[in-house]
Length: 116
Length: 112
Image 1 (cartoon, rainbow over the protein chains, first blue to last red):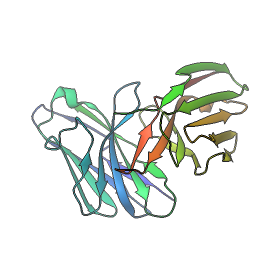
Image 2 (image 1 turned 180 degrees about the vertical axis):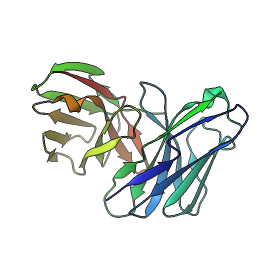
Image 3 (image 1 turned 90 degrees about the horizontal axis):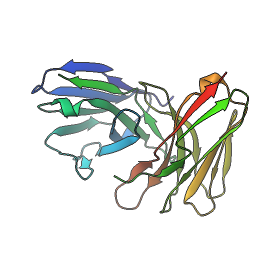
Image 4 (image 1 turned 30 degrees about the horizontal axis):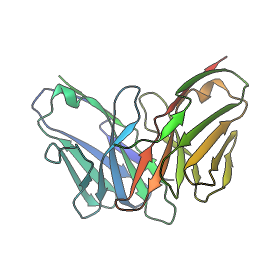
């Protein structure tokens, strides 16, 4: 149980295009989903917290107009990187929190974004 | 953003040895989680801790939630080559915005 999927697993795009990444909880309902960014050999940095049916809460320094987050259902959240540039190239990972009593979060496999 | 301090930053050990790493914070957490991340993949949950002083095992892994609620440690006994990877601790913050704060990571390399 507690499986989180991400799609696509990797994407290469041209500078100026937008890229959408999907995060799904496959066998549980996720009241909260989180989006992280990870640079090589570094830890995970939280970008935003997403609650179903409400606006995402962005961390300081993360541009909400640049990284659009939608959490339309209890099993799906999407991150859209708008007008991507090479500096947006990174490993993006989502996680989902089980809405039960335990405070555990489960991660997706990540999406490698390369902007040319 | 804020990160928890993990030590050591990296370590090489011989197969069969025991490994210990810890995670410290300046603030209190009510839940501690330990994850392992392999290259190019998302972190996988190893152990979750919910109460101060709690000691929990998962196979060869043992983790403890510090009494002060500001630290946690993870032990790996009799290490094997597949233990290679990066280990992250995470503390759950529930005051204000509900979110997990991650440690800086411990990179483990096992020499066969």
